[in-house]
Image (cartoon, rainbow, N blue to C red; front, top):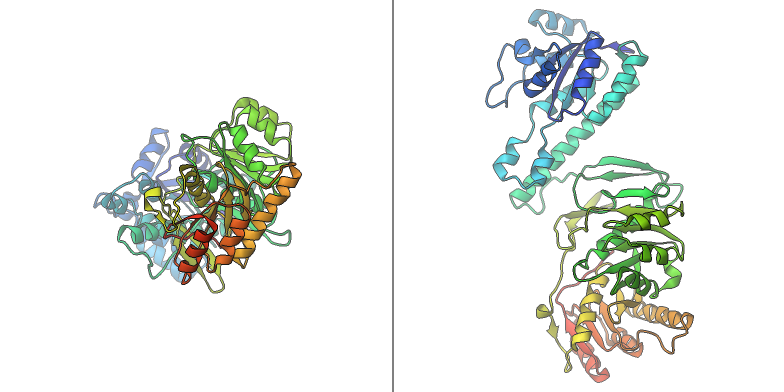
Length: 529
């Protein structure tokens, strides 16, 4: 690969004009000839810079509403020619093709166009053709050509030129080329994903995902694993879009757990009342409503105080001072909320290891979208679990139906169970979890573990009996046998919500009737692996 390459000629064609004039001025000051198109050329000329139109180079005007302007041998030959190849040099001389040493292109804003709800025709018009073609050509020929696709790389380019007397190094060009190919790949992924949805293809033959580096991470789930955090460009409120006010850099596990916590608390609309979710290792250890945010936090904390230590706290309303004071009573890794009062931020500022994140709102728990998970040799793709049920959709299957209070708690428990690793069992009393069993191979074991945790908390709080007495219980999938249901009854549960659908539903219903339980079927399960 050629060592230093002096920049003599640059082609600039950008949709995002941020930093454009400063870049143009810096290049012109080094004697670099500027080629450009349309609005980019106009912006550079308005700044007093000398610019040559690409149309002058190609001999053809822009045509077809700008669809055809750079797709020409005079452009692609200038990008692709190998400068150390005699035949290439001869072809360039014979056809009057000048070398292009720098390409600066950012693409039509397709992702932003789709995100604002553009219709099909407008989305198609915002699919860039000439830009990706030039980018790929320049990136392929990175032995001789520098290609810049992100405005954030302008400063690095100018630093290179300053350090190398107007030239770029091979390593720098390689880095730019890798970024360029990643950008065109992400762009094509966005187009193909949008089109699959637009034409109703739930399982297209080829599926692509892409992301932009948000930050390298110290390590992954464990210190021996390398890791990084990428964003997908969506505006969905959450850990990827949050502002971090303080604390050290988030870890891989912090990000994963914070996402789980915020998605869970988003099930509870703030206008209905304050809610809090506390997460540990991607599972909730306490979820509650309250008259105040402070009360919601305390009730969530009292579900499992041991597990809450070092956990993640998510709130559905802006953090206030009273709640901040309560949270500071124990060590907490991360707090995420739609906002935070200045006084609450000041309190947290005294705890350098506590991270505080705020967002512009809550994610829509009912929104669609895709999730994916890698497996050996491939990956699994599915719709986001945005399923929910209303009280009108529930089927009462026992002789006794739930009371109004039981029904409210059943609906609360069902929302929480959706976010607990399977097999999931959730006991709820008066709008707060009082026992959670997660991730067990046997449903009856999850039922027992949740009840035992409630017993432990009763002893820790000097209560006469566990709060599972008089609670309701949610199961993310059906009870295959009566044993799990009877274990919940022994713990004091009086009502049950579950999907139903077992071959032994009749036996389970009969056991519920005999125990005096009210039970409803949802017809929907919430496995979470």
